[in-house]
Image 1: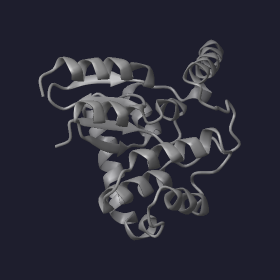
Image 2: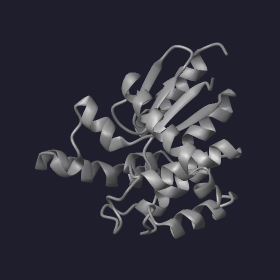
Image 3: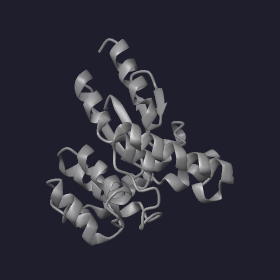
Length: 200
């Protein structure tokens, strides 16, 4: 079992803003990470969440301000209204799961998909974009097709697990040693502190 279960969505701007800080934190503490892309729309629907487009205008306005504020704080490029959003998150999620099954570092791959959506104006549901991103991250793009069935099953299982374990948004981090939960990229410092406070 991994030390940290990481539930995320490839279309989530907050997942993008998390960058690769989780990988840096895990390396600092000698922790392992299990990458669990999930169907965030389904999770919202089952945990009382509301899709951004259906939220009250005051919430949408605050979300827009906060996204730009956090991007500036993190010095990360960010497009508040990308051309290809929303889009189907399943194909890119399948690609990540297939790559994880094949072995290799999938943290940079997950970030590359979110970056493609939120800064590069690319449709991460497009097979050509998926192939390009996988190749750029050192993975055989054929994995996305070869491992599709198993990846689809894992994606559904991740979504079910997320709901069962109290996940309601993305990104979401669960420390398996004590079920400590952290929601949002702005809680990564708290996750770091928590890992540092516990004997390993």
